[in-house]
Amino acid sequence: MRSLIVIALLIAVALCETEAKCLAIYAPPPKYPALANGQRSEGKGLFICRIDVTTGWVKSVSIAKSTGSAILDAEAIRCFSQWRFRSGCAPDVKMPITFTNKRKT
Image (tube, rainbow, N blue to C red; front, side):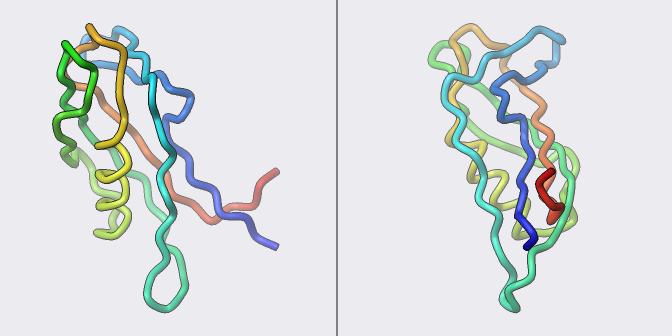
């Protein structure tokens, strides 16, 4: 049976524009949405989180490189919007994400 895997930077460390590390202190995983026919799209994208450096909350998320699917892009934005970083983080954090239907090994 195939397992659904969603890979994101869930190790809770992301690279900032300054190449300094930003520690995510709250990082819920994304959901893997199905299409109307029950299939799941695959795609890799890159998103930019704008961080409130005082609180660490994500203020906004923009798409730097689309996953190729509006549904996956929307889920990545919804997910990353909930993340929180340690205060003092850089104001912009690059967040890669991969949605795939590969088997767990």
